[in-house]
Length: 546
Image 1 (spheres, rainbow, N blue to C red):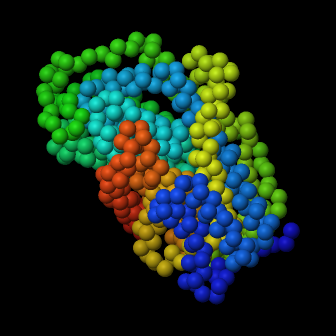
Image 2: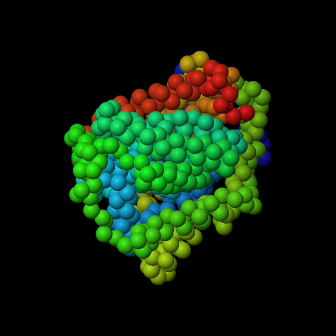
Image 3: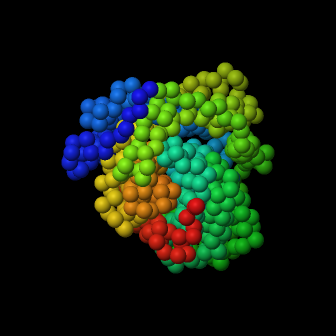
C-alpha cells in the first residue's frame, strides 16, 4: 500500500490549523464539562469530528482513517473494557453474597479512631480497588464504607476523592500506562518506571493531606507515626513494583502491603488520644476512655476470611498473569507501517507501527474473569447464576464501555491522522515552562474525560511530540501526562457523580466539586513543579528513565 505522510499545517496558517485540529478534543471536553452531555454521546461526537477533520482537512485516506479508529476500538474492547467488566462482575457477586458488608465491618473493626479508619479505608483499601477496577469503583466502595461507619456524606465523598489520587496512574491493572504505551510506542516498563519515579513522593504526602483536610494540622500530627507507616509502606512497593515488574499489580500489591503493615503497626502502637467524632471537628479523647465503649463487629473469623477470599484470589491470579507470557501478535493490515510521521513532529521520518498484541488466554481481563469464577464458586454461586450476573453487569455498564471504546478510537484517530502532531507543535511555544504546563494538560484531560487512561489516549502522543520539539526527555513528559492526570481524578464528573450516589448525596455534586477543587489544583501544581525539577535540576534529573 502507498505510504501516506502526515500534514501538520494543512491550512497554511499555524494558528488556524491548530484550532481546527483541536475541534475533536473541544467537542469531547466541551460536551462533558460545559454542556453536560452524556459521556458516550460526547465521546462519539469527538470521534465523528476527528474522522471528518482527518478526511476533509488533513487529507487522510478514508481506509486509513477507518482502520485507525478500528485499531483504537479493538484495543479498548480487548484491554480496558475486558478488565473493567470482569472486575465489576466480581464486585457485584460479593455484594449479592452479602460479603461486602462483612468486609466493611472487618476493616472498621481494626481501630475506632476515625482518622486511622480514614487512612485504612479511603487511602489503602481505595487504592486496592483502584488497582483492580478503577472507573469510580474505589470512590463508590470507600464512600459507602465510610457512610456506614458514621462519616458525613460530604466528608465521605470528598475525602474518598482526595485519597483516590496517588494510585490512579496504575488503576484498572495498569490500564492508563498500557494505554499510554499504545499511543506513544515506548517500552511499557520504561513508562511504568518513570511514573513510578514521580508518584511515590506524593503517595507519602496524600495521607497527610487527607487528614489535614479532615481534622486539621494538630489532630493529624497526633498520629503521625501511623501516617508515615501507611504512606511509606505504599510508596516503596509502588516504586519497586512499577520499576521492576510493570504497571499491572502496582496498586493492588502496594495497597495490600500498606493495609497489612498499618494494621500490624496498630497492634503494637497506640495513639495517646483517639478521635471518635466522625465530623473531624470534635476533640480527641484519651486512649483508655476510647476503649471502654468499643464493640466487636460481630462477624466470626470464618465470615471475615470468606469476605476477603475473593480479593486474595484475584491478587494471586493476577500475580501469575503478570509472569512473562507468549503473546499473540496481530498486524492491523493496511495500517501497519503505512502512516509516516515527518518533520517537524519528529527529527527523522518514521513509519507508525500498528501491531495489536493480545492473547485471549494470557490477557489480564481473562485472569480477572478466572479469579471471579473461582471466587464465585467458593461463594456458592452456580454457573447459571454467575452467567446471569455477568450479563447484568454488562447491561449496567454498556454505556460506560461504549464511552471507553469511542474515546480510544478518537485517541488513535488523532494519532494516526497527525492531529496530535499539530497540537503538540503548538504547545511547544510554552518553551522551558512546558514541563509544568504539560503536566497540567494531563490534569485537565483526566478532569474532563473521567479517566487517566482517556487523558493518556488523547494527549500522550502529543506530549512526546512537544518534548522532542523542545529537547525534553519524551518518556518524562509522557509519564508527566499520567502523573498530572491523577490529580484531575478527584474533580472529574464521573467520579463526583459516583461519589454522590454511593453516599446518598445526590443533587449535591456542585458541593462536592467545591470541596475538592482546590485540593486537586494544588496537588497538580506540585506535581508540575516536581516534573520541572526532574527536567532541569540535579539530582532530580537522575530519576529520569534512560
